[in-house]
Length: 519
Image (cartoon, rainbow, N blue to C red; front, side, top):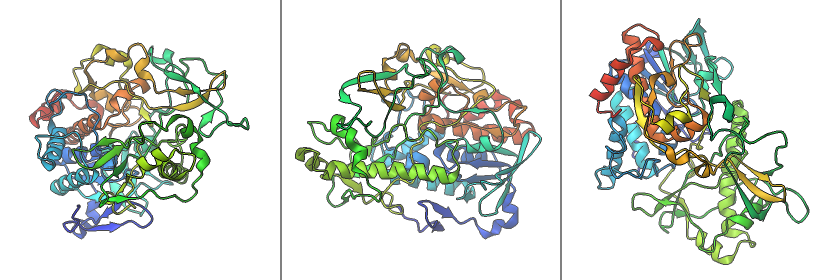
């Protein structure tokens, strides 16, 4: 289990995060940094570490991201290709260091599977090693930052702390800093016409489930199913966002298992759809086993379509959305194990499982971070598109290479013309072009805003990619690679006293390669 005795942590009241006490020796001068990273994801950790490694004075500000992001909060089965080696997946640098460290935990050369507490320990150890101050706060929602011309000068945190910086890096899943800085971004699905992408837009990927009826015996739509939109044609743009979820860590070890409990505001009617589609004859499938343990990463229990408003919502609205997602997921597990309408064999099979008491001990054994699969996308100096993925694009300013299928989760459930259910937005693997994805590179320009909008901001997570390209790019190992590159880009901008747009990409590439990255 985690040992926090090395660190000065305070439990933040009313939340599930930790506050790392910034040493008093920093005093007022601690608020002046050369590089400021916003977002405590693994991308943010690697960005901060890489910039500090280049000699920068760096601050890491958590923002809306729980410590370690989803990597340390339930996503224990990494999304990489099925290759057997780190080298074949081109995972070098800090990203390879992480997977090698996970392997060491389980007696292997490396591991793509790991328990949440192991990932969190790595995050905290590397943060310790970097000596980067960690501010467990978000920016002030009323006055997030000061910008002079095209340059961000300061962040104002919600506790009144002012963080001044030369270069800023947005490593949040939501792209909150870039939005506050006034740079251009997109949310939702691009149309087919916008970038000429065959897989883009509404309705391109959908599956009709004729055996499932969209309405109950009273003629009402079952919860989560929506009427079919009449004004949209296949391939049109819309506000659709793939579903979010909590990646819970379950176990069938009776010494570690906590029984599923009925959450507050539980509503059994939310799960009427499950009575038609999710009760398998084989019994409950808990998830993917983690590194040979008795724990699993459960990638399910998502209230499809209930997250569309999250990105542009204020914090109170976001909390309501995240609270609903947690209630829905906890309630679904309870429903499976206790509702008399669920067959007894299925109830018995799920009741062999429960939340792992050895994980997330400070947050009720529940992940601190919801899985934000997609949110804002930067409109930057270059827009990575489906065609780049199909062609295996190579760029002179490449910061990383990546190879993963165009993978989307369900966007919404719809009622079909004959009263059947349509799962819309997920079956991208059935669309022409899906299997032609090749290993492609991501250019530095995809991390950088237009120089007329902001000259000292780097965005490695919510990068300048089309929505379809993002369905491949959105995986944590890609974010880790991008974070390390962003830290070096920031350092080169500070060292050269230049805008981020004028940083020499070849110099960044040279430093990445020097530190073992594989481009």
